[in-house]
Image 1 (cartoon, rainbow, N blue to C red):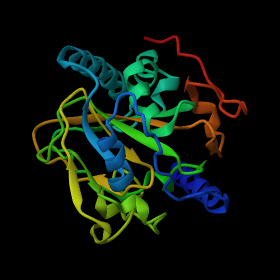
Image 2: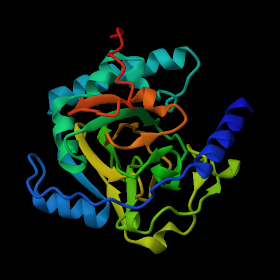
Image 3: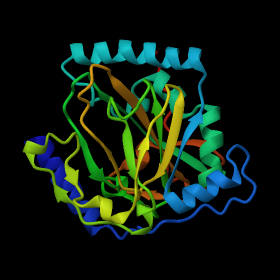
Length: 276
């Protein structure tokens, strides 16, 4: 009940905030890592995918670390979705969020003054049975303007069989959409649902190998099916925004300056946790 009350209170605050919820296209004509074609695709479709960041050995290290972390969280009463804002608790997750290879790619989309503020493992266990309904990240985040990107890093291989993420290409151009609270019978991992999302564009499946990433706009419609397979499907969402974005609800306390500067001093820039 307390969690439900907190969610309602946060939605009230989001409703009252004056927010710029239109897509701000990337204007970078000289990207360092991405190609001009990828920049164009991001502006057009709202996502890019299949970018390798970690090799097979590094991907295995990421998986081994998560396996141990998940075992610890489960033993303490958590579940496979409860490892959130992890960079403020675990040094190894902070290291992922601030990894130079990731930062270099995100800079190409958001510019040189860059904040990393979010980290959440989304782990669908074998035969988990829980979908993630169509939604926009911007509906959950007290951020403005809408210049934020999610990097989805595959910890396990993710494909249609084990419920990889899916996008509605181009839906970030529609603006902020009305959602409804999810019904408990839907077993939605999150608590919002946008109905009839397919009217806004083509469904694209975000199949990734472990160590690869996709990147999507905070306004892009996305979700995933329930994992009915015997294989786990884990990824970590790493969240970034331009330094001129402002955060409500105290979320600026989560933000790490990973590139350039934050001239206003809005973001708290917490240090790496001592754990790990």
